[in-house]
Structure formats: structure tokens, C-alpha cells
Image 1 (cartoon, rainbow, N blue to C red):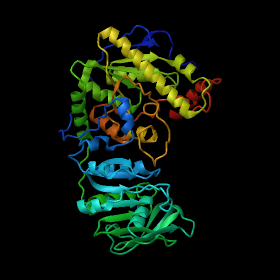
Image 2: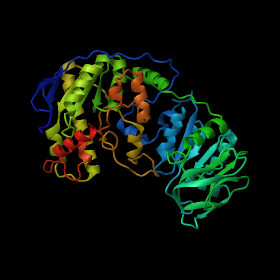
Image 3: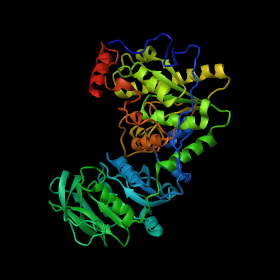
Image 4: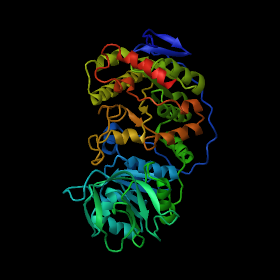
Amino acid sequence: QQRSCVRARRSLAGITTYTAVPKLHRVKGRLPLFAPLPPSCGIGAVCSVQRSQARKNISSLATMAAAGAHSEHSTILVLDYGSQYTQLIARRVREIGMYSVLIPGDASMDRIKSTNPKVIILSGGPNSVHVEGSPRVPADFFDYCAEKSIPVLGICYGMQMITQLLGGEVKAAHHGGEYGRMPMDLADNSRLFSYLSKKTVNVWMSHGDEAVKLPEGFSAVAKSHQGAIVAIENPTRKIYGFQFHPEVMHTEGGMDMIKHFLTDISGVAADWTMGQVLEEQLRKIAELVGPEDHAICALSGGVDSTVAATLVHKVLGERLHCVFVDNGLLRYKEQERVMDTFSNHLHLPVTCVDHSQVMLDRLRGLTDPEAKRKAIGAEFIEVFKNYRDELERTIGKRPKFLVQGTLYPDVIESCPPPGSDQKHSHTIKSHHNVGGLPKDLQFTLIEPFRELFKDEVRQVGRLLGVPEQFIKRHPFPGPGLAVRVLGDVTDTNKLDTLREVDEIFIN
């Protein structure tokens, strides 16, 4: 099968395609139809900062909260101690309808206070409280929580840290720890499980240490079948702990446990909706971008960038210039299908740039996934710079802004970039739109979904009238097939083979 994109200049569905850096041709799009928007409640997550500034706070959801962006809503603060499930905690809180922020577990007391939290959750992590230098809350953390009457919930490592710091004792589990799904027995008359009639619940364990002596005033309200203390509480001090992980789906009724703690025990109201987020995003973009300023939107064909483009287009109209880059790493007939959707369904003004040969030449010989991601990120920026320069010659305006569909998982999975201070969550992968961007970006970023998860972006897309078939489109990463080809992507016909396999699988 031949690649779907020819490298000659041609027209496809009314959208002009051009190679690398030729004279720019562009088709004006019509404003899309939008669904009615709910009343504004003043909330948003637009992040627009120069890259040099962004690297200082790139990994933290608290950036906007610290500036008071979410002051009208209850904030659930999650302190991250490195668990692979930490972002799930933040997601579960959002799913309940509350705003959550995630910052490093050893953040300063001033930074914790700046989020004005209603509740604080201490996440799990791979560390042991016995190891010197293991992360922990500031010395005056519990005094602050007592003074402000802030409920605290420790999960896994978080519970062990509470126990150790408040005068209890944590030891290595004599039975070697507990891992996987297993039953726990509930005590009578506990606050944490007062809504449950059953006495045994299956939960997800992952711990090698365990609490063997509780601090004064604490009660053990659940134990595993091996005898380990797996839930503790001190209602007077409003401090609670789970040794298991309620945030994962393997824990029976885990979502209900979190909701019960937040609503019934902590008294927090669910006041976070995507309608409010959308209204605030629209307002912030209008305030940020001057009436004569132009912006470029990097469209990947995925849900995130498409919804971001639709949102920004509602504010800027023809001052938004969308560009779709064929990087030579797309799926089978991806370019044709995506451009058809942009033109005939979303009515977005889009220019397609064929950068495939340049990209493949740049990747030739690279085998390390991180190296490939960063090379792809750098090449994307070169395309946007060239596109910006061509636009300046054509329209007489130099676009200052770059719109990206960056999500919160993109940010935390790319940690820790320089200056991010995200010390306890290890780098999962550098996303091309975060860790792969160069320092001299020369754009001001508009990333309206930088604090949102993908399911939240889908909700925003529905509010904006993005067609459901596009909302449910099969996800595809920005670096494309490069990260699914082991080794050199230019070796033999790996890309073509993978395209055909992918097409069979999706259909």
C-alpha cells in the first residue's frame, strides 16, 4: 500500500496541502455551530506562559490555583509521593465533581497554603518512611490542618507517614507485605465505613511496610485477613488513612469510599463542572489575546487539539490559523480522513504541511524512544516557526501564540523536566508537546486543557458541538507510529506494515 499523502502540492477537500516551506495557501473556514453554553461561574485552566516560565511550573496543577484561578471552588489538594496511581486520585476527585490539584509531596508550607485546600490527600509512593531523606510533609503541616480544620486522608505511603510522624510505629511487614486484591474486615461504628452494611470488602493492596502501633487518639477500623491494619481514623483531628488504594477499579466500591470521605465526612460540595471551565476558558483567551493578535494551532487530528482549536476559534475566528503536520508517522490514510473531518464537519480553517521526508531524515538512526520523542517535538516547532514566518509575509501579522491540546497527563508523564520540582513521580515518557519542546520556543503557549484529563476534554467538546464520532475517535499519540516501531523507524518497511496492522485492528 502506498502512503496516502503525496508530496506534491495538491488540494484535498478544499484544503491546500504544501510541502515543507512553500508559498502559503489557505482556505478560510466558517465558524462552527456551537451548542448553547451554560452560565459562567468564573473557573478556568488556561495556561499561557513563555516556555522559560513554564519550565518552572510545568508539572503542577496548582499553578493556576495558586494565583486564585479556582478561588470560587473547593480545592482538593493531592500531595504526590510518587505512586503510579497518584493521577487517578486527582481524576476520581474530578469525577465526583470537585476540583483537584496535584503538587509534589515535599512542597513548602507556603505553597500548600496558596492552594487554599478544603481537603488534603497524601498519595501512596514507592518510598519507605524508614529511609533517610524519604519525602514527607512540612514540620508544621498537621498544625496548619488543625488550625484550619482541614480533613486529611493518607493513602498507602500517606497513611504510613501519618502514623510515623504523629507518634505511631511502622515496620516492614513480617509476612512480606500485601499485594493485589484481597479482603479486609471492617470494624463496627467507624466514620470511614459508616455507610456500608457489609463487614468484608475486597481492596487493592500494594505495601511492604505496615503500621504496627497507632498514634494516640487513632483507631484501627479495618484489618486485612493477614492481620495488617489497613484503615485508621481520628475523627477529632479529622485525620484518616487507607493502607489500600481506593482510587483503582480493583477496589470494591473504591469510588464510593472517596466520595463518602469528601462529601459526608469532609462536607465538601461538588461544584466543579466542564460548563464552568469552558466559560472561563473563553473569557481568559479573550483577555489574553489582543484584538489584532493572531495564533497558530497545532492540530494533530486527535480529540485534544481539535477541541482546543474549536474552543479558541470561537474566540479568535479567522485570527486562528490551524496547521496539520503530516510527519510521515501517521496511520493509514490519516491525512485524508482528518482533513476531510476538519473541512466538512468542524469547518475549521486548516493548512496541511507535508514534513514527512524531513522528519524521517531527522529520525534516521535513532532507536531510543526518548530521543525519538524529543526529535519529533523539535521538528514540529520548526514547522510552526516556518508556518508563522510565511503567515507574516502573507497577512502582515506575526502570530505570537501557539495553541496546543496539552493535557494534564502529558505534563505529569513528562516529569521531571528542569525546574519542575516534581521529585517523587518518575518520568514515564517525554511528550513531544511538553518535554520535547525546545527552550527557545518563541511562542506564547495557550494550553486550555493543561489541567484537564481526556474525559473532561471530551465533555468540553460535546458542549462545543464537536461531532460525537470525532469525540470517540480512536486515540493516536502526537509522535505517531514512531513510538510503536522498535528501533529505527526508517528501517525496511516497518511503518507501512504497522499502518496496515493498525487499520485492520481499528476496523
